[in-house]
Image (cartoon, rainbow over all chains, first blue to last red; front, side, top):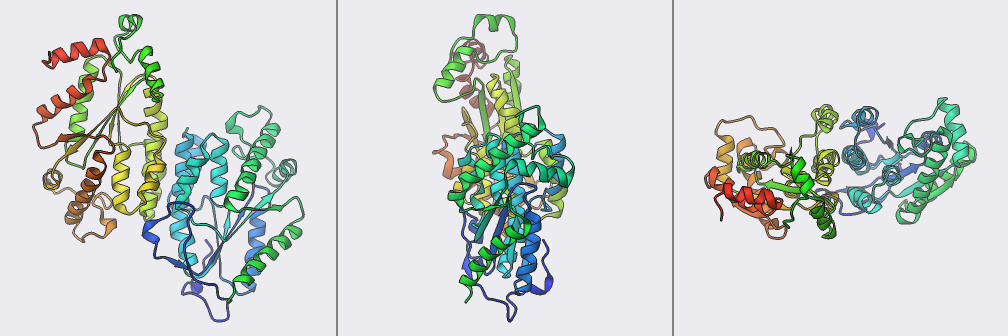
Length: 251
Length: 256
């Protein structure tokens, strides 16, 4: 979270005002937060590693701040609860898929209740570098039922905008290799026994993930963005959509 | 429920499980496991752990394959959460999810595979503990139930009912230091941890009572003598034993 203290009291004079409303959940929600009202907006950027997510989050943050919005960013694996623990677990300990999914959900809940919702209450625009969709897709391709994941994440709030940076797996492979000079074990699906050939494994895994995201477009309102294009082109596309949304809601 | 074990199995293996014939029958009844799941529920101080321990000893004595598991006891999950737990303030949702994670780890690692393999799995607290506690803490009860929807229904659930004052007295006699969440201090029931604990336990009892008939609990009077309770429990469990074992066991219990 890059929350600046001076904005925490609410909407500063001169900043575009956004309407206050109750939280809207995907499922059963969080009963003890039913009185909570938020002024901020939640915008999610989803996409695989190498799709340019964090670059876009940085560019959008800079633009929104120059427009006078207070912006908070959040990602996966950043909560204090078990953030570092999950990585350890993934590396050393053989956790089952349900266990792993629940761990990520607990970690996400911590971030949601301690960072995202308070920031929204304070009037921030929260830019989320990935959200529950990545967690659900990862679990689904590893055999967890979609219904169960959906129910599990029923405590999460619906974002105002969700973008999915769609990159062709072959293009993605090159970008990842250039950036990290290697592949991430899990992002290549190496835990799934898809192929002994790591390139094949990566392509198969990324196609499975892309298919899950495709399925989620309608159900969760994900907007696919062609991210085979240049950073600048993708950013223009995203920024236009965000600006249109925010301008439409200004009072 | 009672089918004879195959002769080969009975003859060659002193540690007896449920026969393959019975496994198939269970599967046909929508239960994909060959083993048996026995659960004890109740608030702290209800005597359930003592009773489960005695049942464990008895089943082992009868030569059956037994595995016992306790709520919130996964080493792996503990290792991962212990650092964060101290720093972070748990909300009812994160509290619930961490316990669900612990349960899932024990379920995926031990409970389910062992049930598949024909073991008697004895669980000191099961999904009902989550239903009761998380609901009292303010989570949506439907949400909690969906999270545990994959967990197999126990063959028997013993609920140990004890009036809250007796149970609390058993626990608080030594004036133990209660943990923050254990005492329900996060619920702002009282500034006094013992008073908070009493109110919290009382509410959990209400939740248990609410689900007792729907979930088919076998309600035990936890104020009776330990020996009497154990005898009642063993009689109920008789029906789950393989036929040959059940005959020996009922003779030992002094039943006709």
